Length: 394
Image (tube, rainbow, N blue to C red; front, side, top):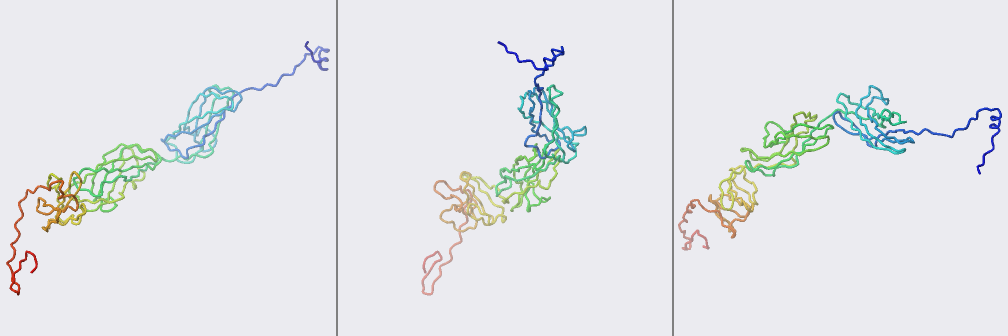
């Protein structure tokens, strides 16, 4: 049985007077999407013309209906916090979104500042528009970044640092040795072009026309982003005629082909240790290795294999073991563990293993030395006896 409620007094009066009855409507709410935009937690502290970066944006649907369709996201640089026609567009992206109420999505917007924009501080303004692309109920949104963005002039600043030097002792004409310079870009813009590293020997730490060029890397292509490094290798061979001595090693980086280095003063690198130049010429080769001779008085006192060379000394280098021996050409009697070298002097095995039983000494192809002077005539002592200078007691 269906029970009807009793008619109200107003209804009874309306029916009695034949007036129309107006019924009360239920409460209704219009459902719509609403987009809200905000900046990510890591905004770039500075922007540089021609240097691409990205800004993270978060789009949230704060409405009560799904937001589905494309949205346009734009970023502007402005002298104030109001978006107008004078502001500079630096980034744009269009994304298809499908966000339920209360959900959000992250969007990365690439930015590129035009070179014509003057350096200075600017407001970063975000514009999100879904209305023009068909998202019902959404309205264009404008948001301003919490901190200003600094636009900087692009700068390239190359820094040279020697990270690998030739051996401490080098000889003109010997095999090439590796030397390496690390080039760093301290600037805020990429260094793209070519660079050459030139190596010098110098008697001081200042580069001048008297310094001796010992190597060059040649023109090398480099592409260094801000705060990036690149190693450039060279092969060092000392030219003939380099004076014997101790030298500083300098490396100069020269940039070209579009690289405008703002600070050339830090392009010169100085080695953290000196190198000694020793002039040694190969004399002959034997079964044990090479026999080499130092240049006259220039290398007196050079320590080779534990022995010190005298003037005009000769050095034996064992190619197999790396051992060395020396001859001072003094004519003195050899110690027990020595052999005779081809030039007539004596080999001192204190710097190597010469005279040992496991290998033969160098061949003696030279003429025998002259006979020593004859002994003096016998001399009589006061007691009538004779003695000789050959040795022994009187």
